[in-house]
Amino acid sequence: MTDLKIYCFTIKNYKILEKLPKHILPLGLGNNQFPNNFLSEKQGANISYLNKYYGEASGLYWIWKNEIKNMNKNNWIGSCNYRKLWLDKCYNKKQKYSISSLYSKLLQPNNDLFSKSEAIQVQPIIFKEDTVLQQFEKVHGKNIMVECADFLDGKIKNDFKNYINSNSLSITFFLTTADLFDEYCNTLFPWLDKCYAYCDKINILHGYNSRIPAFLMERFNSFWFSTYIKKLNYLSYARLGNYMLSDSVNKFINPMKLPFTLRMYPTLHKY
Image (cartoon, rainbow, N blue to C red; front, side):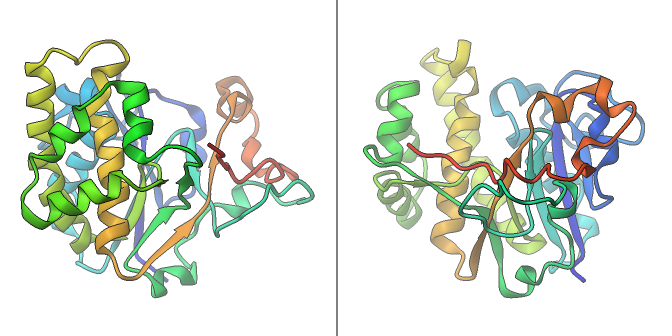
């Protein structure tokens, strides 16, 4: 069985997080207070003050600085968030005839995909008309990503520029071994700090664009793992709706354990 810890990022204390399998660990981000049984990015070495801009990247930083030093290099680290949870395989269609519970289909440490992989991403979104760069620029503005790409050096800069002109994007979270996670973070955070400084200098960190460093991290994450990991595989995820997250419901039952709750999953996107 794989030694696996999946850190579940959250900005609020949802009751459902206390009902997750034990290998999925709630990690509180931002300024809210969390129960004592939650991990919190405000403890230990952290950049919690940047969460407004970095989003889930501040959680990755906390794991990098505080958790992997206590791990074997072959231990597996994963990330997810309170709305988005890993499923146990790669599904290509909604499971509308399934009688299974969502809970029974969450990723477990005994999944044999770990023995076949160095890293695992969420099955990618394939843009039909845009590249990754064009999709980003439609939402956030021109030239930002291209300018930030120039803060990378040598081959990785050229590889990233090639990637953003492709049409495949995996969402933010991933699973990998502790040694590869360390390698990834050693590349990501010096670059992300330069991106943040640049965006601050040109005064675009406001409104929806206050999280541009987080959106850049998402693209970089998809790029780095898909480009440099030889044994890369994919899994699906479930995006929880309001019923699943409802504290009033979760006072009495764990809605993920009800039969037929896998039927609306996996979460699939078409662009």
